[in-house]
Image (cartoon, rainbow, N blue to C red; front, side):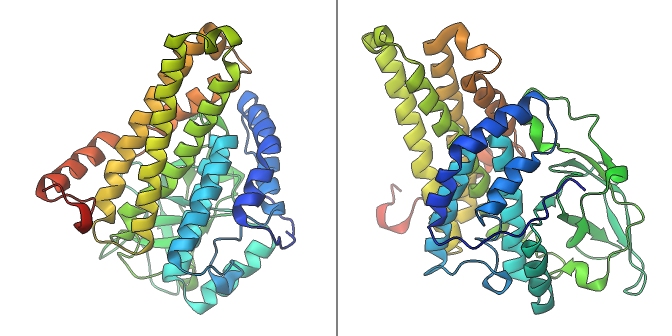
Length: 376
């Protein structure tokens, strides 16, 4: 079992400060796991040691108490950005874990949140796996004899995470969530994960055939996972990790500019464009997080548009960095190279063109930005 099993001591400082304090170590570990990609166990242990694996869990499961949902969303935004700045592969794993915690918060029964507390005490990390090759994963049988058939594809953290919440299709009705062990080596196939970026995520295939979940392993009711506004609006969380990567790239670009480059108005203009793009992405992600926190009915369409804004900002900053730094930006061992490779892959998450098109349809109907400042 590759996943962490350590007891984390409670931390008194704010989540943002705890995450930022880990930057140097997580960045250094990220370089190592990029060079020889395996599940980033030491990086995960570092997050657990700072108690960040539990911070956003349900209160009943040991999670921190926030003033309200908005305060929690802003705290989570800061942590996701901080982890993404250090290492986007780890950020993707952590975002999946937080996604699972939110699903337990929304749909978990008391028995399930109590179990979650126990495994978090042991240092468990979760994932959420929805993508699957045809014919998908099915749940068959009766409550006394439930069985899974099928496999998940692009299963981030397969073989390394302790557990995953997976989507399954029952014999009748909409799909639902089941918690399964995610660390069975014999069920894990990472041979197809041969990629330039996001290497340490280990997003491979995981065979679920033959697993027998208990009724208590079924989380929520059929259809809960796909329920909006939460389902679509939750995209702000992976946008926050991507934002952290963009911010990290901007930091590296600034550090790489020589005195001669800083005296060159063309290079300064490029740097200014990168700053504007980064801050633009940040404003949109923050607004998307705030809207999702209060279940704004327009939050899904705002999140869809935010995805496109973050993608465009990332592409602009990557181009600025490559042009300003030149050949050095593509050398092995350069953080600019690693962040660029990771972002290039991460931005392909779940149909960005379709998401932007659906957002445009909504904006054609009404100005989604809000009642107080409508343009039409």
